[in-house]
Length: 204
Length: 204
Image (cartoon, rainbow over all chains, first blue to last red; front, side, top):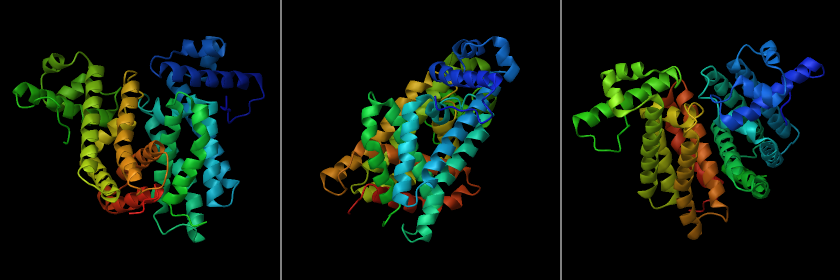
């Protein structure tokens, strides 16, 4: 599971919290938010029900924490993928590869962030908006750099970043719906890197 | 309201059904699916509560009908926008313009299809997948035509269509979150038409 608590996970207590969070990702993905019960989560995590209530007052609070920490995990990974490269070509290739790897490794986190749950919990609406905003900013920064260096055409980089965010999400969702995602993933990185570079008129 | 019943709406009874559907779009958009009550819907539609139960056994059934008919409405409009044009340039420009017009005219339908509710009602998961599939097919057909005519580069047109579907959705969602969507919309059609044509390497 790529899911990591953003807090210290070395103590036994934190290990139990992490186990419940990991179990909850799986349970919500399988059953959907409303059908999933606290009993399902503690059963999957193999902890006592009292342990659940030591950490979370209710299912909604668990779910909101889960959304927050999963979003943080994905955004950090994508940011690092871009930050570790210097040309737009390598940045796009690296970020798509990272996104695809995460999706194949743990489809449940993609389902959690992109499809499930948001409509289920009213308090997630603002969190969803904040997640999308940060995701778009991650894509906009390398476009702004490339524009400064004259490597892409004049354009509204904010809008291009929105379009790339939506494009990558949809392609990854379709990958996971494919009967053989591993096989299908082989061409995605090259296809989407080309798509993105052409879309912003990269001249590198 | 762009919402139209796909059934005959001429009789008084159908008018009441349509009024409830239109009211429900607004109520779900304002309150979210779970907070919205049947009483809210009949209050907004100004019909008796018995009228609701004449048409729908419960809130979930109403919501599923609403999703189906709203999806049908949007898909038909986008399909017509593409079908009425012959070059990829005009097809892309026309479909983005139509999408933006619909979103500005009735933001609630975009919220219903793209954000709200899907996580709230388990039975919508398959419907969401079917809606996405039809949407992607609408974008793929003109790409296949353009590829046959040698107007775009060799590519996996299915994947390009997924990417365009995601890109247009995200841009439209961001438009609606903008403080002045009407003003902001003026540049979207040209920006996204250019983005799409470049992304598929259109040579027209």
